[in-house]
Image (cartoon, rainbow, N blue to C red):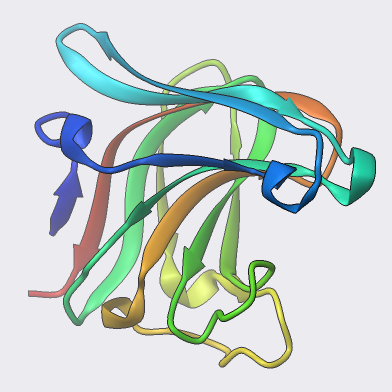
Length: 161
């Protein structure tokens, strides 16, 4: 199991990316916070579809081994849908990724999203990917005008030994 849990979540190189890189109007803020001696991530901001925009995200580079088959994490937020986007060497363009959706409430909930259930965003991508080809993982708010508030902890990658 590859872990990004509270012991090392502070050391990950998380980056905030918004649609401003393409002329959009969305705004985002990212923080690492602590509750009950446990670190967690918070992505908050406003997603705007103005000017062909519509996303905010936190993303980190990942280097996984073979036989990892899912991402496991805890999340809470503001009763909205969020997404995980995975990029590989086969996702050349900014709008290419593999995606899985999850819904959060204001209570911590555990999620386990199997990579085989992720969907590709573009017809020219291979239908699936293997864990050793993953370059980045992002937690994303997108697709409509809304205020985003997503908190994450205990992020782990699960695989066969």
